[in-house]
Amino acid sequence: MIQAIDRAAKILAALQGSRHLGISDLGAVLDLPPSTVHGIVKSLQAHGLVVKEPHGQRYMLGPTLLQLSNVYLDTLDVRARAMRWTGDLAERTGLAVRMGVEFFSEVIVIHHEPRPDGTRQMPETGLTIPAHASALGKVLLAYHPAFKDSVVAKGPLRSLTAETITDVDELDKALSEVLATGWALEDEEAVLGESSIAVPVADRDGEAVAAIAVVMPASDSPIPETVLTLLREAARNVSRELGAPGWPPSVARTD
Amino acid sequence: MIQAIDRAAKILAALQGSRHLGISDLGAVLDLPPSTVHGIVKSLQAHGLVVKEPHGQRYMLGPTLLQLSNVYLDTLDVRARAMRWTGDLAERTGLAVRMGVEFFSEVIVIHHEPRPDGTRQMPETGLTIPAHASALGKVLLAYHPAFKDSVVAKGPLRSLTAETITDVDELDKALSEVLATGWALEDEEAVLGESSIAVPVADRDGEAVAAIAVVMPASDSPIPETVLTLLREAARNVSRELGAPGWPPSVARTD
DNA sequence: GTGAACTATTCGACATTGTCGAAAGTGGTT
DNA sequence: AACCACTTTCGACAATGTCGAATAGTTCAC
Image (cartoon, rainbow over all chains, first blue to last red; front, side):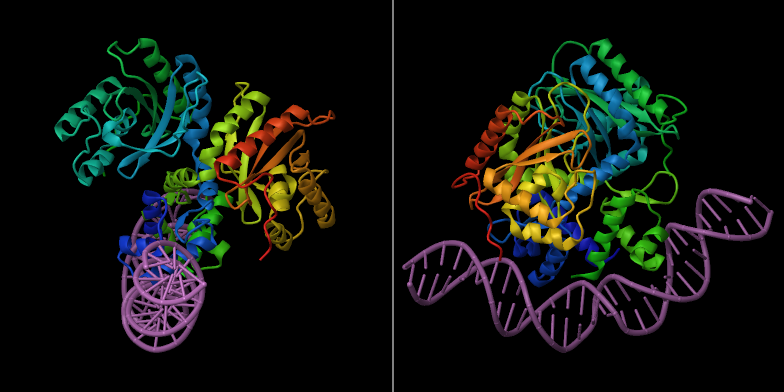
């Protein structure tokens, strides 16, 4: 691991958390002298990865990241293949659709289809959500034991609402149910008033590379069977396009 | 400039251009021995800035960039303030709306409002477009001479279509017209069949920090006055929210 | 308007750190 | 099955990044 690059990445991460930070703030976060931080920041700035804010002398993330992330999204096979189907899915169900992949011990949303009701909704692509408190996460955890291990190893399961699963045994039970049924439910476990259902997407190895979810208002009524059917159909179609040998995916062996 | 970080950024840029590259490909691009490149790539990989592709041993950009870019967009005052107005603008004109800012010697789209006709459109946020061949670019060039200088210094103006302005004198003439009228037109200069109109957005210094454009199919008919009025209104509203002393913005003095 | 305190920035010497060549490991191909 | 090309590991050298002190620039208070 190259020290300078490690530090540079940590600076980007710090700016990601706090938006605007001065040289000495960053120095405090990374426990480094200001002059060292300054050198790194200036190098990042030269490439547009970091920008000095218009007024004042603090720094923030830069536009190059936007350009790079755009290309990142383009390189994702799953996403390109899925976009057609998620559009249909959102339209037919009238619900918002998300697609997510593993991201360290969380889940990152790589595609978001807003609810097709014309209301103004914040784009969610790029959002990271806790794995244990989302339907997307549960699916990915269930089909990828190594991912589950890394989440558990990271520390205690953070509670977001009263419904959040914070106990590992309880999570295990939920995950085996996911494997049994092929889909995961999350009911107000991350955000009050919001629940979601997710299913896995398989790649040509037959492993779960992504998950697709529909997000809906929490309600006491049971999941409409039609929504689940449409969701499953979308996931199966995407999986087929990716060359998956079958669906649902197989559980990746831990190695 | 720290060498290791410079090289890391160049690797990201190379992957941005070519999507998938192996260690030795990158070595060839940067003119470095494979082992050096490998060390840098591994460091980037540890932070999720780069990812090894599922099959094969090539590398591509990583999900951390998506997370970071999401925060970058959040930190942009202009964007947050503009979003409400661009939504209205798109709805009222029935046209796609873009907002862009300077990005080295190009323009990067920081917000894109798709045409509100329900058709499936590719999101354009994160796209970089040549400054001299876009309405957005012309506006930013006109109100920021230093930006124009950097574009001209970069090399000859690349031709994208038969209509692209490739002559510096001709560009100058176009830019003074932009200053005179307060808006810029681009007619099939970047993409055949597409034209756009842009106006500047002023910040609290009274300088142009961004530009807003509507994109429309190219046609022989003159610009509808209503579209221009709505566009101007949107830009003025955003500028006012940013605390601009007036509109249109003043020309930034070259220093 | 002036001074003080803080913060960012520059500079140069030191030694830590990244770099590079060679060798080992891996995967894919003929 | 053996080859070839590529990635990856390893260790020694010195080039490179790091750090402390000094300077320049801001911001705030008086």
